[in-house]
Length: 84
Image (cartoon, rainbow, N blue to C red; front, top):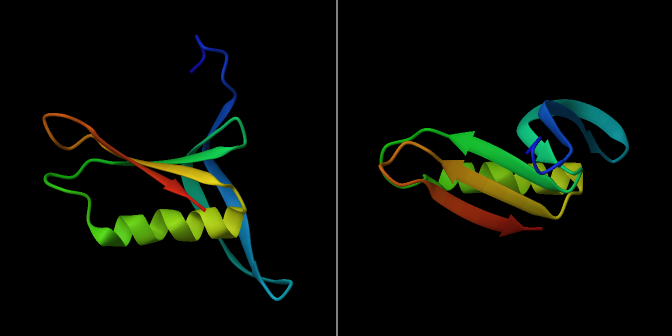
């Protein structure tokens, strides 16, 4: 990403609010160009549904539109794209 001059933040913390009250926070693995959340996993087999729910929750809470769920645990990487 540095070579392509993309701005990114590792382990960016987002505050979570409900009805204008702070209820906690979450830490995204990567945020690229303040537009895309990237969650990295290393799991054998397919990506469990719980991680799909996790990234959708992250997108809603962060108000970002696009998320990538990347699994490096197989011989070939899996990438799933999510849009909020």
